[in-house]
Image 1 (cartoon, helix red, strand yellow):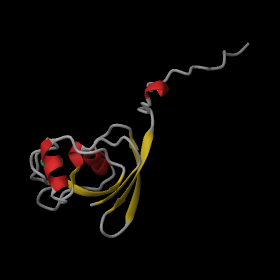
Image 2 (cartoon, protein in one colour; image 1 turned 180 degrees about the horizontal axis):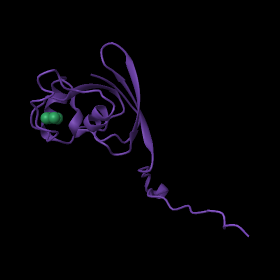
Image 3 (cartoon, rainbow, N blue to C red; image 1 turned 90 degrees about the vertical axis):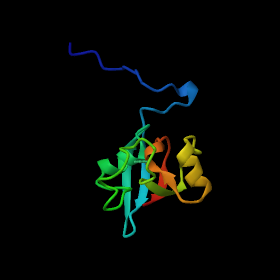
Length: 117
Ligand code: FES
């Protein structure tokens, strides 16, 4: 009589480890004119998340001339107001120390964030 109800609790996350990789995160982005609310899959780079929502950390020229997210050109900087882990890549660390911003290509979205382009 009918199908057995689906009680599959399989998950890609491990609650014991605090890994919430099956989740998405709310990213609030101010583009200089208005706020945008993005729903971003856990672990996606911030740069890729912005592009996926038709937002860009790049200017008119660097939109076409950049390192493609390799962390070499410093053309994808954003201001982080909340929610990013400490930098662990050399150029991202240097720019952060100089208060220039953060490299969006070197930031994995692992929690809710607030940023300004
Ligand atoms: S795209 Fe070049 S450093 Fe991020």
